[in-house]
Length: 145
Image (cartoon, one colour):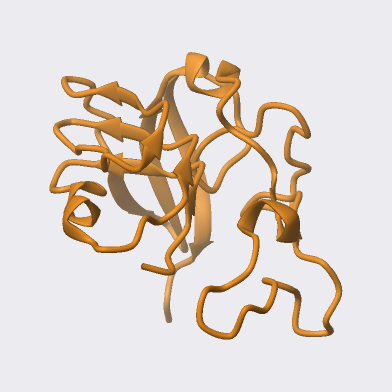
């Protein structure tokens, strides 16, 4: 009952539907549900594309690992995605403390997995700020030795 889900991509499986039975609501917004993944009743304005297959694959290419994923640029146009900040996350229920960085400064997820700036007004859902449609190939890490 103290989980928060903002701007994620859920593919297949239950998605966030399991939270429907939780006695406490969990804040959720800006999430995209694909290939059968279902939102929770607590989700505000979910984007559901039950038949969209992002064709996710991890491929080793030489000494690198690439994520292949099919995206839809429209996902970044939603008015329901907001930059994740301490203010958005609010206070944790039990300790009644804010979500902050390790140094105590306010949290602000304004860069993606690669260090690229997030859109202030319409951050793209998921870990990558791409706003591109179609098949993408992203080098996510070097291959283990």
